[in-house]
Length: 126
Image: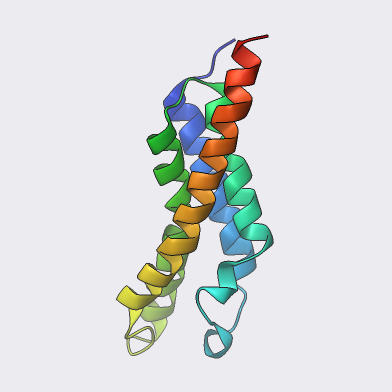
């Protein structure tokens, strides 16, 4: 059974979005320090889920890296939207928050897509 590229990418994106959010969203606003707040286990999960579409389906490198890697700034943006709905003066530097979250997200996405491509190619040659 072959899974559709879009289905696998969507599952990987939302899985990593919620894992990053589970670690990032509970942090009080005054204690958030990006990009430090997203480093660690959340990025390991993002990398693993970026590898998944490359192994399970014939997803190309860039879609896997960019779409799953975008889950990190998406989780940060969800926090910005939630916080500004109750206090519009919070997150007045949100564009910088997005930039600071994009770097680690892309790093994890690219790393995972590279590993997934290697594992997927080994799987196809067996």
